[in-house]
Image (cartoon, rainbow, N blue to C red):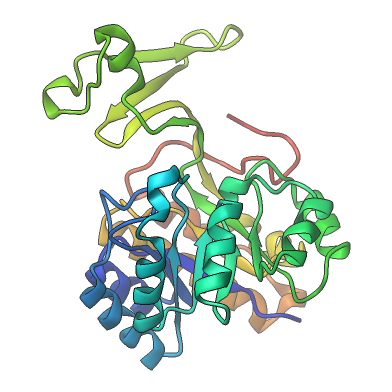
Length: 308
């Protein structure tokens, strides 16, 4: 049976060291540019070199997100940045755009390339398409059930790795601009004075009294935020679906928050592999996770029926 990888976020060097010490097999990070959240949490070249060295000395891996949705000007400094990643000895780059894919293959022909869930891969035909373009790993869409993932696994090459989120935020709709303030004020509204000027909640027709807040900060506007995903009580089913990597969301979470989540998922995964035939869920795992600040939890689409 394959040993599944536990992948955790690291918003800075200190968090990288903490999540690796907590049991992550690999971490994903953002550099100073070309990552969708790079303006909030990023690694300088020096910190990236130190972080990769720290990880490799412990047999762990580091993946760097180059998943910006690019405009023309974004390609001007891409070659230089990719060469810096090579100097840092990162294990893979994660992309979300076919143009960036082509540039990475040209500049770094030997590096592993992973596809972000931004590409919305929901079926085996698309997964095979990306495999044929040179993608080593596909991060599957959050809108898939475990049965659908198993079908994708059965109909794709075995050396194509499949990744999926198992814990964290599930934003249904996102804008990279301060959407609401822009509309109401008729101009760009990214400065701090405009934040928190307007507060909104959304109510679904058949669920009166259940309010879903609209969040707006310097990073953008976030609509229809779901309950948080948590699959710790379904690790056995997730592993058996054929996934290669289980991913935890939360580059912007605190060090303590992420380390707690990583430790619990590490324990759940290891317990399964110790004795798969007699594996039992420890319900204290969820209780420990709930001690962290969070929205209500959901199993998302994994069990076929989305619950908020």
